[in-house]
Structure formats: C-alpha cells, structure tokens
Image (tube, rainbow, N blue to C red; front, side, top):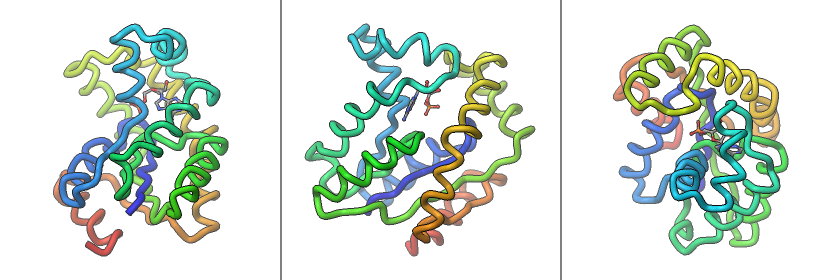
Length: 187
Ligand code: AMP
C-alpha cells in the first residue's frame, strides 16, 4: 500500500506515520528527516538545502526530485511506503506517480490531516521548546505555513479529482486520530 500523509506543518503527520508504519509493516519515509540528516552530515545535498530549510522555504525541486526517485526506487519501498512530507509540489506529485507506475503501483490513498491554524501555532511553540529545530522559530514557522498553503495545499485538489483523499480531523488524542486513520484505510 502506498499512502501519502498530507497536512500543514505541526498537523501530526509524522506521529501518525510512525504508528501506521508499525501497524502495516512498511517503511515511513520523510523527506524532512532525510534533509535534516544530510545537513547534519554536511553532504552536498545538505549544504544546498540548509539556506532554504532554515528560512522555512521548500528545498527546490531539482534537489528533492532526485531524493524522491531514490527512496521510491529502493528495495525497502518495494512493498509500499508511507510518504510523510512529500510530495509537496505538483512536480513532486508527478514524480511520485511516475516512479510508482514504473513498479506497477500507484498512490492508494491520501490522508489529509486537518488542524486549525491557531492550534498549529500552539503546537509549534511546544515543539520548538522540546526539539530545538532550526526551522521552528516563529518567523520560519509562519513561512512554512504560507508555503504549505500556496504550494502544497493545491495537491489536495490534484488527488481529490482522482478520488483519493480522506480528510482526518487532526484534533484529539494521538489514539483517537490513529483510530480515524485506521478506518480511512479499512484496517
Ligand atoms: P518537515 O520535516 O517535513 O516539516 O520539513 C522540514 C523542511 O524540510 C521544510 O520546511 C523544507 O525546507 C524541507 N523539505 C522537507 N520535505 C521537502 C519536500 N518534499 N520538498 C521541499 N522541501 C522539503
């Protein structure tokens, strides 16, 4: 099963993705994690990404498309994958479609985790205190929200036209939201 988790920064995609990956026994792949690891290791990709990342901007598609090709083409993704934090642009969505098609697969479902904006800001402030991410400053977070609305939210229409989107209200306990996720994919 190939699933996409879509939602604003702070919507809880990552948390639900981990639980879902454990239940389904398929990997959760987060481009944000891969980019953070590349920055920490100081790889060429990490060095190119850092300026965009720290400002809360998207890392350009010419860098991310290669990453997507690589992860979706890997043996680990052969039985399906949970995509967390990608695709984030139309070009990335098309790359995902092409890469899955080449394996005789497709996007099976898109779970849109929907959280009101004031709650997102509250969560970001809590997370900044706990994790100290360099893009969890109020300025970078506001930028990430704006980028989500402008560049990523249009993907909801892209997938809705194909009947793939289930909206999950992202308020409540982790368990309550996980139950709704289960229902959405017929678990
Ligand atoms: P995340 O951990 O998913 O919130 O991503 C954190 C940051 O990593 C984003 O604000 C972007 O700078 C970068 N990033 C992660 N995934 C992508 C992607 N698919 N396309 C472009 N930039 C990305």
